[in-house]
Image 1 (cartoon, rainbow, N blue to C red):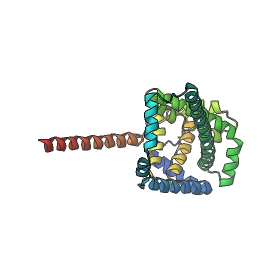
Image 2 (image 1 turned 135 degrees about the horizontal axis):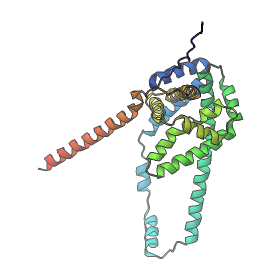
Image 3 (image 1 turned 180 degrees about the vertical axis):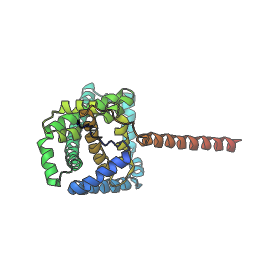
Image 4 (image 1 turned 45 degrees about the horizontal axis):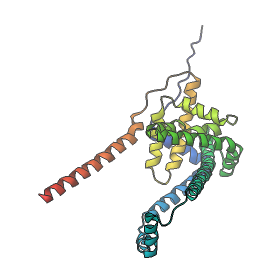
Length: 285
């Protein structure tokens, strides 16, 4: 008698909330040190944001310190008594450009360090493999070259896309969001191959990447941990479906919640503006 064999049904959850929360539970269980580090970063970020909104008197002091001597110097420049040499202008411009390039590479390097550690912890947790914060740093160090190169390429693609009517830049950010996780998951993969793999993996699934990003953005303190966990889980299930040549289920509608929130925000702003204009018109009449 012949036995009938069937392929095992793969789990696929495109609900960004349940997927990310499930991943967060694994992160806390298997990568507790990484989770605690992300929690501390989240709390520090919140504190810094609160302090940034505290008003100060620096602006008024700066304005009042504008002296009559500076005003006269400005007038003399306008009148042409002091001619600014083009060599000075070019030198200052080159210094500014050089400073921006240095800042860019430093920021990208720090980003590679951060996402390398986070991705290492999230990937290990999704695979139910215990990892300490020190081990996550060690794994990141081994892949730092690929992470740094990938971050440079991705950031340049995003900047270029933003300059091209913004939308291509947003698509690039969503398309390549999984790259650090792919690098930490596949120890031998190169930066360019990881970028191409991320693009291929999320072809037709950009809204799922957007949904995970949205969930992380709206949850305080642990938002970065939630989005990292969700991304690691998403990569795991998309890879499993791709290797099995199976079609993934329909994208869950909650992945569009970010667009819904943005639409409501603009609707509220438009309504407030319209009401304000109407009140001003009535008051003048």
